[in-house]
Image 1 (cartoon, rainbow, N blue to C red):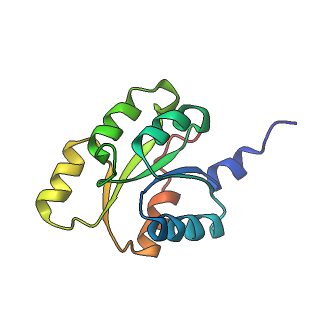
Image 2 (spheres, one colour):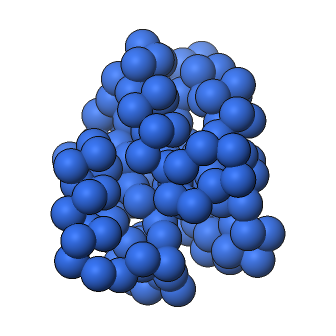
Length: 133
């Protein structure tokens, strides 16, 4: 029996890419409690390996990763056909207007500063403008 479309629009697949274990666990806990399906990785290389199979609706990407920055990772993920409907959100400690502008210019739809506002994050993940597969 095919999955119920209404359930799919409420529960999203979210890829979290963050090398800080505490930050990643906070995002995981918050989003799983909200009913979303999570895959958490700690490097750009790992994200590139798993993203196509996981086909996330949303990718929360830290800018300061150990092996490549989040800008380059987002560019490389956007090249994957399975992520054509994915929404990319920068999650970073950088809060300046220039950091926000750089995130948007790099292809992120949103920029969230750490520590992330829980209500803002949940609202962004639940937003209706997503191409949910």
